[in-house]
Amino acid sequence: MPVHHTTSPAKVFFALTILSALLLGCAQPTQATPAPDSTLELILDITSTPSVIRYSGEGNLVFLSIEENGYAHLFVQSNPPQDLPLTRITTGNWNDIAPALSPDRTQLAFASDRNGFWDLYVMDLQSGSVNQITNSPEYDSAPSWSPDSQWLVFETYTSENLEVSVVSVNDRTQPILPITQHPASDHSPVWAPDGRHVAFISTRGGDSDVWLANLDLTGEDRFQNLSNTPFASENYPVWNFDGSQLLWASISQTIGYSGLYIWNAADPERTAYWVGDGIWGSWNETAEKIVAVTNGSNQQYITSYDIKGTLLLAPTPLPGRARGLTWGFADLSNPLPATFTQAAESTPPALWSPQITPEADVPNQRWHVVEITDVQAPYPQLHDLVDESFNSLRNRVIIETGWDVLSSLENVFIPLTTSLDPGLEEDWLYTGRAFAINPLMADTGWMVTLREDIGAQTYWRVYVRATIQDGSLGEPIHNAPWNLSARYELNPRTYEQGGEYAAVPSGYWIDMTALSNAYNWERLPALPNWRTYYAGARFTEFALTNGLTWYNAMLELYPTDALVTPTRVLAPSLTPTRTPTPTETPRPTRTPRPTRTPTLSPTPTLSLTPTLSPTVTETPTPTQTPPTIIP
Image (cartoon, rainbow, N blue to C red; front, side, top):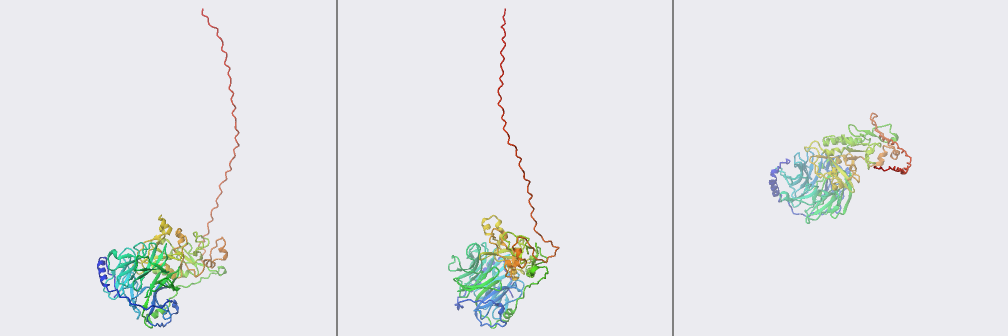
C-alpha cells in the first residue's frame, strides 16, 4: 500500500528523533566506479527508435523527463548512444517528472499525476514495473534517494507552501517525516552521500537560495544558507558521488553569470564558482563531467562540460521542455521491458492542424484574418493559418485550469489603422499571429510572472491559477515571481530594477508559457527599456511565428506599398460588414484665434502750458486826507 501523509506539527520533534535514528546506517563507503567514456554524445532523434530495441546491458545512462504535447514523459539514452538512442520509456495523458536513479542502480524514482494527483513512484529498471510510494491529494515530487536506497527525501505541498519530507520506500507502515516547516517555499531536496545532510532550495531568505539541513540537529540551528545570493535565484542542487561538491543552477538578475555553479564542501565559506551555462545539471558517477540542460527563448538544449568548464558536447536541441534529469550507471534488461518498448513505439498525436477558410475577395492570393468566436478583444481576429492552434490551446487551457482564461484578451489582431505604444510599431499583433493575455489577471491574483534572463534579453514565464485547488489541477509555484508593479512604490532601487521579487504565492498553478509552447506559441522578449517602460515588458504576449520574420509575416496580409506608405490599410477580413470598421478619428483643426490688430494711437503732441506772466496790479496812490484841525 502506498504511504499516506499522517504527520502533525505536534509530532515533529519525535519524528525527527526517529528519523535521526533510522538514518544512522544510511552512509555507505565510497566505491571506485569505472570512468565513463571521455566524451558525452547525445543523439536526440526519438523518431528513429526501432520497434525492437536491443541493448547490451549495464552502461552509462542519462534519464530525462521531456514534455511532449504538454505532457512530460520519461526518456533514457546510453553513452555512447549507438547502443541506445534517446528512447521514450513512459507515455500517456499524464506527467512523469523528476527522475532519480537509486544508488544501487536498479530503480528509478519519479513523480507522476497518472492517478489524478501528484505522488511518488518507483520503477524497477529490469522489469519496468512501477510501484506507488505516496498516496495523498497533496503535491509530492522531486524525490532523492538515501545512500542505502531505503528512503526518499522529497518536496510536498502542505500548509499552503512547499516543504521537505522523508518517506520509506519499502516499509509502508512508517509515517512521513518532515525536515522543514517554514512559511517559505522549501523544495528540490537532494540527499548527501554521508546520509546526514540534505541540500534544498528555499525562499526563506527572500529569494531562492541553496540551503543545507543537518539531520543531526533540530530547530533553526540545523539550517545553513550555502549560496546566499540576494540578486540571483538558485535551483536544482545535486551532490557528486562522495559529497565533496554540490552543483546547482543560478539565474542572476543584476550581477554575476547565470548558469551552473560548483560549491566545495571542504571550503564552505568560499563562493561557488561558475562552470558553464545551464538551468539544470547532473554529475556523472566519477564527478568528472556534467550533463546540463540550457535554456533558449523558446527552445531547450542539452550539453556537457568537464568540471573546469570545458565544453564536451555542443548544445543539442531537445524535443521539448526538460522536467528533470539524472545520470549514472544502470542495469537494463536486454531486450528492454515490454512497457519500455510500447512507450517507444507510441507516436504523440498532432495537437492541431490548420483549416483554410476560402476567401474570394483577397487580392493576389494573400492570406486574411478570420474571426475567433466568443472572445472579448478590440479586434477578435487571427491569421487563417493560426486560428485553429489558438482554439485548440484555448480548449486545453480550460481543461488544465478549469476556466476560460483566453476568453478575454488585451489584444489579438491589430490593424494598421491602430497605433500601439511607442516601441511597438513592429509588434507581432499586427501580423494576426499573436495574442496578449489580459494583464488585469495579475492585479486580481489569477496570474503571476517569473523573470528569466537569457543572454542579454529578458523573458517571462506566466502562470495562471487553477480554479480547483485540491491538487488535481496544476502544480505549486517553486520560485519567487517578479513583481513588475513594485517600480511604482517610490523606491529608487526597485524602479531601476524594473520591480522586485515577490513572495511565492500559495496554491496550484498552470505554466501558461509551457502549455502555449506545446501549441507552437512563443513568448516574446521584453524591450530593452522594460525596467522604466511598463508596456515594454510584453509579459503577456505570445506569437506563432512559424519561422517568419515580422516583415515577411506582414507581407502575407498586406501589399508592399501598405508597409511603406503612411496611409493606413485594413487587412483582408472575413468579418461581416455589420461590424463597423473603426477608422482614425481626425483630430479637430484648431480654429485660429482672431488676430487682434492693435490700433495705433497718434503720437501725443506735447502742449506747452504757457508761462503765465504775473499781472501787475498797480497799487493805488492813497488819497491824502487833509489833517483835521482841532480848534
